[in-house]
Image 1 (cartoon, rainbow, N blue to C red):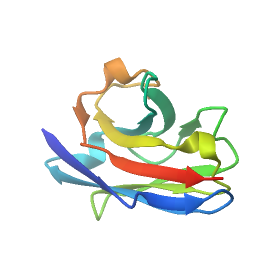
Image 2 (spheres, rainbow, N blue to C red):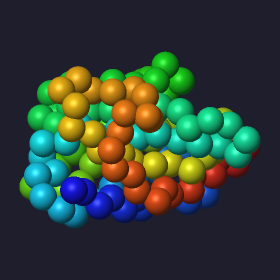
Image 3 (tube, rainbow, N blue to C red):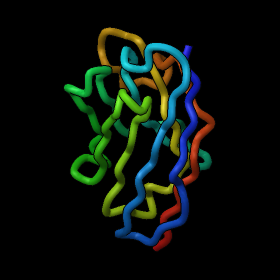
Length: 124
């Protein structure tokens, strides 16, 4: 089992950057694929980015491709989301999630463990 806690959210102007962190506790963090999702008020939770347990493969939603970078440090039990060129439409509660499937998943339904989320607000 894995416990996840996100940090690094905040208020930023459009065009700015933030780096989110997700600290994991529990065993075998290095065997989990990790994902970032976000949910804006009145909208469904949506996929942002995901990373294979080894860090060898990354996946991004089209809306964040070329702007966001997902990475992990298994020695620190932490996954990161570097967010650049932020837009007001990136405003949401951001969650990290862990999954032990063989394939990296884009569906929130297939992730096993979730953090409580960190709020990102981008002003125009």
